[in-house]
Amino acid sequence: MTQRISDQGVGITSPNKVQHTDPFADDPKVSASVLDVAGVFVVVLDPTGRITYFNVTCEHATGYTAKEMVGTYVWDKLIVPEQRQAVENVFHDLVRQPGVQEHENYWLTNSGKLICIHWSNTSILGTGGEVRWVIGTGLDITEKKRVQNQLEEQAAKLRAVVETAVDGIITIDERGIIESVNPAAERLFAYPADELIGMNISTLMPAPYREEHDRYISDYLDSGDAKIIGIGREVRGLSRDGRIFPINLVVSEVSLPGKRLFTGIVRDISDRQLIEKRERQRLAEHAHAARLAALGEMASGIAHELNQPLAAIVSFADACRNLIDKEEIPRDIMRDALAQISEQGVRAGDIIRRLRQFVRTGTLDREVVNLNALINDVLAMVAHEIHLNEVDVKLRLKEYLSSVWADKLQIEQVLLNLVRNAIEAMEDSPKHGLLIESTEDDNQMLVRIQDSGCGLETAPENLFKAFYTTKEKGTGLGLSISYSIIEAHGGTLSANSNDDGGATFWFSLPAADDIE
Ligand code: ADP
Image (cartoon, rainbow, N blue to C red; front, side, top):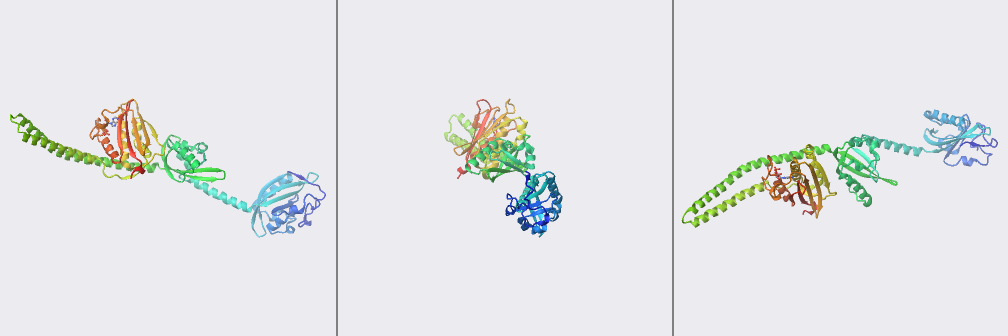
């Protein structure tokens, strides 16, 4: 806004005349007291840029007196050399094109200190429309600027850390909508930042983690119960190209005035899990091979041991047959022979029982195990077979499933055996559907594996007997060992044929906190 004031009554026209003189002394509307208002810099320049008025605030702040300054160009002493040109330009613009302009610049004080001032400059016109003065009013913003620079510096440092972080960093609002991502998050999920921003975070997770995550946040907002805040959790990530990979997610809350944000730090742990998986596979294979080798030795020992009672049974039975043919049957001898047959039969049974005991697991190496996670691990292990056999896997896993107190490796073997059996049973079947469910009932965790394969060829109880197999190269030991493992954990393993074809196997295990 351009101001127009009367020519008469303007006290200052000569630069040398003044010190603390009110330039508008004769004008009742503008008084010296206004111009000397505490804390506000007021400088009046003539159209050439020479100072005609320099108020008390200016004097105090710069250490120069008005007497020294009046008549000098503002940019001579006060403006730092780097800003001189810019200040001159602002001034000349205001003379050429009268108006109001705001700008910031530094003044160099008499003692060599720099003060930053926010200026509002106004051209004052005479009656002929020409610019008579330019009045600058300013506020010292040195401290504000220092804080602002410090904040900008901190923000720049933080930005550098976030930009170069190896972990993905994602900020979401209360509804789970992504507000910002770093380059690592873009790489991890194979989405460009502009696509990620505005998307719901759950899009980056496959089921059941997707629903779980939404629920976690809304539960937290409702109850303050932090199931995920500050705690690292292993979940699965889903990239744009459909790749599902294990991630470690740590969520923290950022409270801003009137706004709540969550920051998620996401680490791809595929490599770590792959190494662990390979190690587990190696251990499992090792255990399997060791069991088979020991079984081979045991079998020849058992064959030898069994031979004796069987040979004894045969010879006592032959003796009985001969005795029966006699006219006079020697009852005492017959009774003895039959007693021997029964005794040898019991002995043979003992040998068989020992075999079963051997197959049964030894001591259990228990830990807290989440069956849902184990199911996912096992599916990852058989991913290749699933792909080759074009099996359509459906998961119906219960959220917040309680943990069990189990030997992880052994339960993994059971699951692996059940899933592999299911895949094999579907090899010649027209339908290749595999449904895996986890549920919880009365402190028992239940896992069901339902296939659409050939179905059971015998009564379910026969399946769990050692050496029952319908496969050319089967051992018939998988289910009997699985049965023993589940039994040793205090659970049960059962099977059934489905009404519409295929078979279902299920096992139960007690909840971890239910075990004394
Ligand atoms: P193997 O797989 O070496 O035969 P198992 O003890 O694991 O040993 O299985 C025993 C038998 O149980 C199999 O040969 C098969 O006849 C039957 N069986 C197991 N799982 C299934 C299934 N999902 N569908 C139909 N039959 C099955």
